[in-house]
Image (cartoon, rainbow, N blue to C red; front, side, top):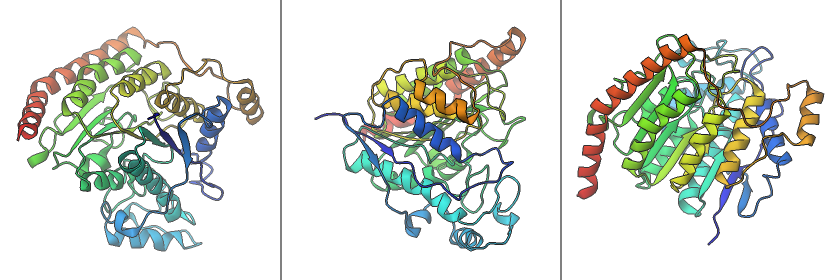
Length: 385
């Protein structure tokens, strides 16, 4: 049987906007789609472009309170500016605009469909670039996120009896997902992110490791500013990869934010496509049923390059590092800078790098001493019964 992959099709995004001066640009999805098309990645053998079915309220209620959903719908239907800071709605970070509820549901419906395709239709991998809104809380919008698509989809998987690894590669800690599964041993949540000491959302420290049955099942690797390719790969290789292999999940769920890249305007990590593609190839080699979603990324060319690389890896395609001529012309006409698809390995300045190296080594040592024995011990006991 040939390997099947699914890409959630680009929806009609006309009319959706966080505002001209907001860093989150809806156009990034179109740019990523255009680059995939230029590389010939939208007509591959074994792949399908899938339009998801609408998400129902019952599904949303597995992750969000009814009161919050009612207020989000109410604000979405209003043509006047509205705000309710109890629910995180209407501030500079999470603006309210006509149709915001429908916009948020697009991400959820695509991620739920991706999970369904992998678990019920035999797809080896399914990618929803429109997902990855990992900051949304049960009753509060946060970090440009209104509905938490990952939590809704993972709840669906857990209800089916699946064990899930959630791996978050965004520069921001996946706090909404961690909070949802903090007391569960059915979901192993791993997040590599810029340190919350000085960076939004101010969470994701090593000692945040779960409670009750979930003790040891939340794993955080906070990274200092100027963490570069080699250090990012080190963190993945020495913590994330062995834990994923030990947990041996039924489904691998990855959030593929592209704001770790060194040219992102909101972050201070110094990762490039070199480390990004390295990690994706190692995940592919595990041959675990794979659900992937988008996430952050505020340099739109970085987003297009990153998610095109991700889709290529999911389909075992090696892409030329040179952007296709048709895409170069497109971005030149739009005023975007021309960057090759793949970067060479990047090293940060020595003093910055030494501080980042010292921090990552301390984090790795702590997690290996405190988390590995708990997780692997509990895991082994549960699997043997």
